[in-house]
Image (cartoon, rainbow, N blue to C red; front, side, top):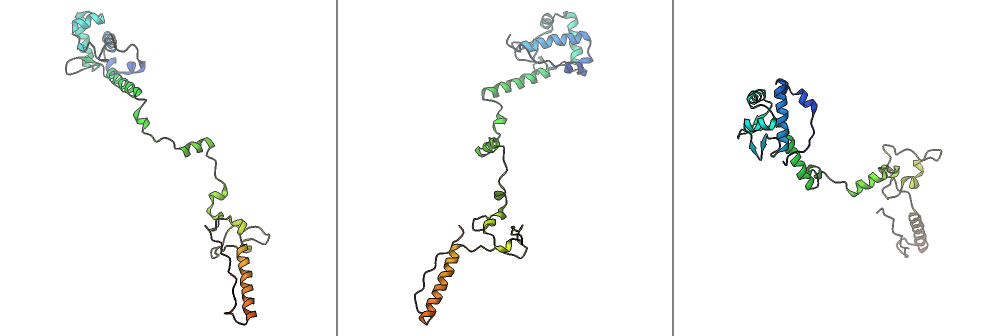
Length: 224
């Protein structure tokens, strides 16, 4: 005997099966004995031994039912569709064969490492894992708001013009609809302005704007 040693039995299903409730108490008892045979032998779910179906004489001996009563009780069970027969005439339990099929699939998946449907799901990336460990903290306001950064790559409040501040010296909330953003002059711009003034004075002193040797201007700072 290499069938099922134990299995879950849903008492509510047994009690609520209308087909079984239509049968007499004797027929219900015979069906329970037949289920014991089906669970204990291969294939599981079939009232058979070594794959061979049982005749009424053999079934009467195994179930402990008088052979004279067995025919009528089997007819009662079959009439109410409590069990089914395959093409070879073997009696089987629809519920037990379905449970045995699910158990075979689960065993095969277990040998392969688990349910193959679950392994198809996308694994967490390294960045997802880091965010999960960090608790997915929000970014700083500067990194969240692109308006807080000027085109030169510097923060706007540190390089804002005087026009962008109110009378109390506080930074204004934003630019008006017609106002354009202007880069604040840097120390390089101030040095170039001084050099241009020196060149103008040297040209005037020489008596001609075309004569003289101009001082080379410093390269302007460009935003990366």
